Length: 612
Image (cartoon, rainbow, N blue to C red; front, side):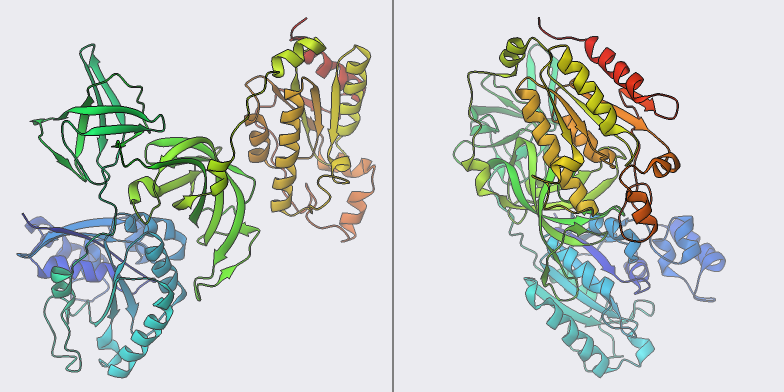
């Protein structure tokens, strides 16, 4: 059975990636007759080579790709030679589609990085090389393409090779080989070419056929559970794809994170039971004991389990136009496990040109950064360098559902295992009964000058008069104390809300009705505060006042300072405000007095008075 090599082609725009793969498919005779006919037809209609064939059209399948002459989506192609089978991913070179390039690289063992001989090393070449390294690819071929357009100059080849090797010194590639070629003409692609008599190395295909890509990945048995199969009362199986190692009936296994022990009873597939299963196979395991297993659990050898933690150091490739800032929460997926994750610290970002670590308070699109992540639950994992399946994760915006980052786990933070939750005898329920009230958080949000603090103050006075135990957290007052170190950048605003939300959570746990008056401009941060409390205990009050009315009121003189240029990053003027989509209560202060608004909120609270 032939071994399969998975590789990726990447590089900057117009370096010739699609042409290279198309020519490989053509010259290895890997194209069906209808594809050959389609290539002749498409070359005449959309080609860029005059009367010649445009091999890139074999890969550029989207209409937008053909119109623009660029690759947008990831295209996978398959071919074989007598020595080996190949799966190749053609990935976009344009910076806008870097996330698609990362997708193609995630399953590859080797990267072919193209460099246009006329242009040399470009920023995107460096970015793709660092992403290749980040994703665990340790074998690289630098294909210096379009050598025919520079007269097969040995000096140019040597200069580009020296530039790349100097750049890659801090990238621990196991192998790095440079090949001069012309993808369009086929020189040094399938067989060695006489066009470069000064080059005595193999052709690209010859190198790919013989390249040894022994994986450094762990070979201890690991299988994340994708599905619990219970077709009837007599069968319970645990389905998944084996991430590493092998398993046989009779093996002692441990289920994580619970730590439950059992033995493998059988390995079931569509074709029948197996005596053994290896890495990459999708199987169903049955066990000899009734243990609690669900999707996202990991089955390992009993004596070689993986770690479980809820705090990690992670390397991220940020993919969103909206920058990453510490303190914001995201949905996280790691193998088949889901959690809510918060970036607690941005340790540094990595300069794509030099690899130097740069301090950062936020992370922009297509930037690589190392961050600390905190999860709302413990998950089983392994470092990405040891096991790609158990160490790879993605972050998803909880509102837009956009995938905003791909991440690779370095290790669990020590405090994840050193800090434990201490169980206390008195809980929130006991404190609520003592105070004869239902604790909750009323969160007032709106522009500066909308009337939030005025209304919150009236609500607290009314609650206090009726014997309720309350506390008002006002944004301005907090900035004189616990938040005095924070400014008004997006990162500081996110941290401001995070701190206040945590304080409000503690006060609700103390049995208080907590009133929070903050501009809190970002929906994601208000949702973070909501997520800290049980359902129904967070009441969002949108004090809806047009910015023109707020500016007319201007009780603190802030809008006047903004218009004079004395204040920057002011919400509603030069910094955005994201109004709530579904608040529990909306108060239009143009039509409603502060006293009437306070009555509306008090009525809402009294509808559920809590224990008596």
